[in-house]
Length: 270
Ligand code: 2NE
Image 1 (cartoon, rainbow, N blue to C red):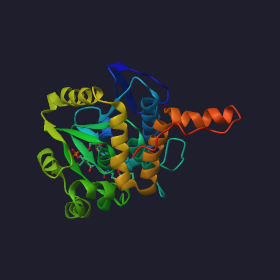
Image 2: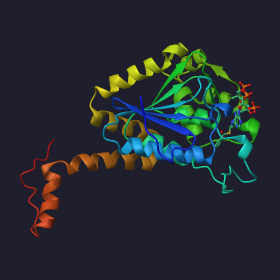
Image 3: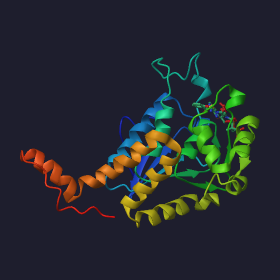
Image 4: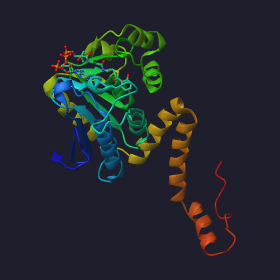
């Protein structure tokens, strides 16, 4: 891995290698709980990976082997929300959830240890999830006075069904890696020492495939859950492909050449 440094990468590490970007939440002393600064850094990192044409797949993980992420840092939760070092309240984690889903590259959660609370929702937002045998999953919202009724409920229900999703949210129990695999929360479980090797192998398999097909598939899966915003994402991809055709370019050229467009040469494909 090559580490990329950036003054905006507060609380995280950003590495690249052979088409893969790895974003690591680096606050192991609090099981990688996030604060506003952490979320801002992750937004910057995901946007960096999005724009980098050499990157085809993104891994999201946590440092230290004991936690993927334990959600919002409860120590800096003020009267009306989480507070940054300058005293500003607000956590852009919902924006981060949406970004993980709309970024047109597969995002893989690489999970060792705790994936809890808002950290668990981040893992739900990822496209694939590879868990180590020591991984533990759960929501704590109703216990700590919080909840994510947005993607945290919608995506969980799609993955495990409404009965199980209600159990997870209403009882705040914890589930081990095998239970998570059995209920469809993760794709596979491997020994901790094999976690990165296995995750990189999954990334390499995707890197060998058509990036456009993967891009359109991701948008298609999300369109099912994201309503008009999901359709916007899917249709935006279709527009991007249309721009690359002679038919799309004829419209632009005619406008720039101040003539009527001639679409007669383009067949109406059945
Ligand atoms: C994750 C869990 C179950 C692990 O338990 P254990 O016993 O293995 O570790 P321990 O001792 O609790 O944690 C180690 C250190 O990390 C801190 C702890 O306070 C402890 O620090 P020290 O006492 O050693 O100084 N720590 C862990 N998680 C933290 C957190 N989220 N914030 C601040 N410090 C944290 C256990 O640690 C646990 O239950 N953690 C809390 C999980 C939680 O409730 N997260 C917030 C859910 S709400 C949320 O994330 C959210 C949302 O619902 C909506 C929007 C945005 C965020």
